[in-house]
Length: 268
Image 1 (cartoon, one colour):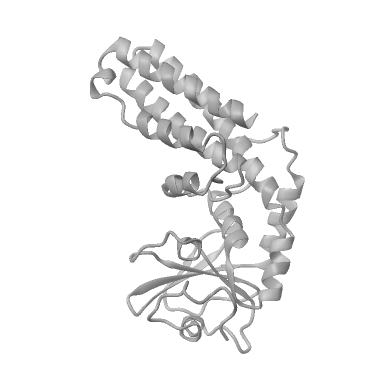
Image 2 (spheres, rainbow, N blue to C red):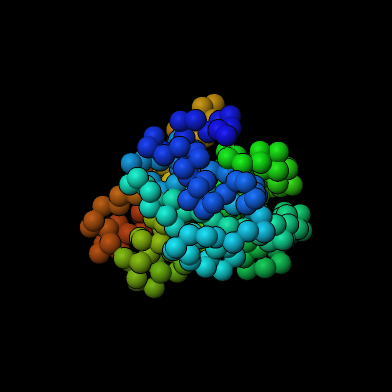
């Protein structure tokens, strides 16, 4: 019952059979079932949840079911581990394929990053990186319906659009004398620029808490990897005095703007 690629990714105290039994999966309740999230991608920790995705016309059977708008989540605690079973209907997943196909890169007809919701982007990323538990053939078929490179380029494009708006905000705040907010916005702008570059290089994970992981996953031969990492860290800690000193705030914001423009130039 254990499929290739799954061993070593499940919690040691729970077998695949036990995990599937939490939602009575298998037997007559068969859909595409796969693992996703940090446990699969190699940066999980002892407190990490285990994310299990179910694509099929099935309903959760657990005692703690939470509607998520676009999906339904069934939560279990088993042997000291939290398991989140996300149920997605095939109709909704097909709609995601339609929306991705409809995107014309370089043409923006909607507000920034509104083609997909955040949770939908998480789903798409975890479909790309997931590991099948049941129906591996069906899982691969769903994967094949998505152009994940196009998804990453869409995310890069939309993040650059957000960066552009943040740049205007930071400069306007500085000119208006709002030094603290100008410094904070410039700092966040640098982080968004890093996200944009990682998406440009193929990263599809929208979860910002893993930003450093995303940078670490850049190819070893990436020409900008070292500069990106070192400058990001340096600009994350502006001198405390600069938030109250006009000259210091201006110097910091201007450096953030220069670096952000440099990163965007690598993308464009």
